Structures are given as structure tokens and as C-alpha cells.
Image (cartoon, rainbow, N blue to C red):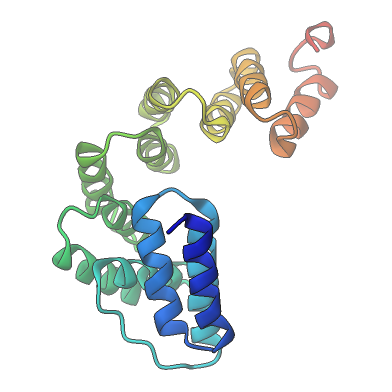
Length: 217
């Protein structure tokens, strides 16, 4: 069965208001492609429908506990988010995405040491640019710009075709007053995604403010 056929099957359950089975189906799709942003957004949307309608839903797998935990993170229910992500990890200790997600819930619960431990563990299991970028973000938000820049650089080296990682690196450089290098990072992001609105806006800002010379445009 193709991805599209699996999504069609899941959407049939949505039409029947059977969110339990719809989420279960979407989670099987996600397992085949863990960084499919469209599938992730759809699962989180379904959780929001469950929450808004006060509907009964009982997670049973590592993935369903994980996505409920992520949904609760976005609802700013951090304590319950961590509990769900704990369950996800207990059910599957190899679920690196659950460790990455729990890192954010812990970081914004004022548990930075535990958050750093989780994101570093996720990287040890799956050393992708996205996770390294998350680690850089944590360093940035705790005021450690040296390590932030170090890991943003490592993130783009690990995943050079991801425009968001180049853009994030550019933001950190800009915040550290390295405007010429920030300009270069934004351009690298735009080379990968010519319509990248935030990168385009930041290049315009650097040029209009005179922080980089206009002849470079």
C-alpha cells in the first residue's frame, strides 16, 4: 500500500469521527517516514480535535503516547506532556523522536540539565541535523552563544540540504553581530528554497539597515 493509499484509509476514519483509529493509522505512516511534516501536522490536528471536543482517547503505543505528549506541549500542559513522553520512551527506549520531544517539554519546564541530556541522547541514537539544531537552540536560549554557533555549524554540515538549518544558523550569527556571515547563511537557505519568506525578510533587513553593503545583493 502506498503512502497516499494509507492516508486515504486514515482519512476515512476521520470522516467517521473515529479519531482513535485515524491516529493509529497515521502513526503507522509516520513510522515509515518519521520526518514527514504533513503527517506530523495531521496527527497533531487530530489530537487538537480530541482535546477541543473532550473526546475519549487512550494511547496504547509509543507513537500515540508521544504525539499526545507533543500535543500537550503545544497546549502548554508541560507536566502531562512529560508524563506521556515518559510512557512513550518506556514502551520503546529506541524512540529517538520521543527523547527529542521530551527535551523541549523539560527545557520549558525549567529543567535544562534534563533537557540537554535528552537531546544529546536523541543525537547519540540518530545524529541528524535537526536534533543537532535543537541542541544549538538550547545553548542559544541559555546564553551560551559559543556552543550555539558550534552546533549550528555542525547541524548544517550534517544536513546541508535543509534550508531551515542554514536560516537558524544565520539568526544566531545575526544576534552575535556577525552580519556578513549571517547574510551568507540566509543566502544559502534561499538557494535551497527560493521562496523562503523569513530568510528573504532578514536579507532585506540587513541591506536596508546598512549592516551589510547593498552591492552584495
